[in-house]
Image 1 (spheres, one colour):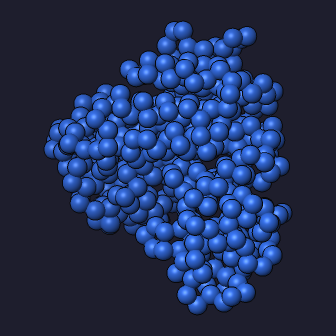
Image 2 (cartoon, rainbow, N blue to C red):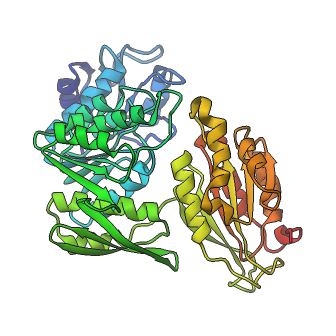
Image 3 (cartoon, one colour):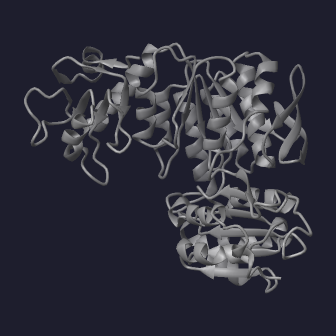
Length: 480
């Protein structure tokens, strides 16, 4: 499928092309580049111009550059622009302009990626959906996602994130969504913001880029909901709230969890919705209500939306529930793993701890007769001066108090480790590698283990160590 011709790309960017070419995709990384991609030579940790020759050798259709790189021949297929980042944004803007797709923008301190994936699944029941495969939600990720969008797309889901004030509104204007959604406002990136209110104002700025008459959907259960509501009413043609409190336009009235699933009821104008999610977790249910609100305002078939919602489950690192077999001869001898290792802030950790606290354990299947609920937590980054206090405060959560053991990774999580009572205090290590080397011998069949931390803490290595637990010998030293 042709995504960009050389003439279209030149018209979109105002650049100069060498030769005629056709691109079937857009790539910024030679490690994942596919033959036929347009390679975008962004400057990040390395200058992408240094990889243009390699990209062309790997079959790139052309390269988007600001100058002819050294070693590249005069007949090489190029799109030469004044600035590569600006050129990528221009491609994204042109791609957005040429499609008739309904565009949904998503932001939030917690849950924007899982909500994006939920939207991908549910909207996919109604047509062709375009969304980034990863968390491409920053200054290059949003235009890259847009530039990769086929013109024949029916629905586009654009995740928009931020690290500093003033980042969301320009990205929202680039995406120009018909519907914009804020999942939650919570302590995250506090190093760059003076308060939670500042974060709320930044998240609410996603409504600034709405299409005329567009729809703003926002969480109505937050201390900062008033900020979201005010911006929604100012910028949107329609304002829709969701949550569990009275007066919400999409109100969740009941949540039941069993067998690794969640079943919920919600009230909306025109009736009651009963929906299922293939994962435990109240936070997934609430975001599911927001997704269904998107479907309602887009006037999509409700039965198809509800059926598709029941098929969604979180992916690796986002709360995926994995059963780890520990005995080849007995399939009932398993350990349950909640892989939530991709990211962490106080709100998302609290939500995951609540899921762990409610998870069923198995008794009398392992060397430890009673199954246990065990958390492995890594540092929550970018919390500024309040970081130590916010880490220690996790010990006071009701969910934390129900756990059998809490293991901690990182200097900030040392504050939680020291705040825990002796009976709950597991191990503390400075690095994930040290935890990964020791943790498996502390686990046993029947346990439920949740792993969560900021991405830079590399707790995926701990997840891998649990997934790779050998048949039997990893349990020899399980603690009683």
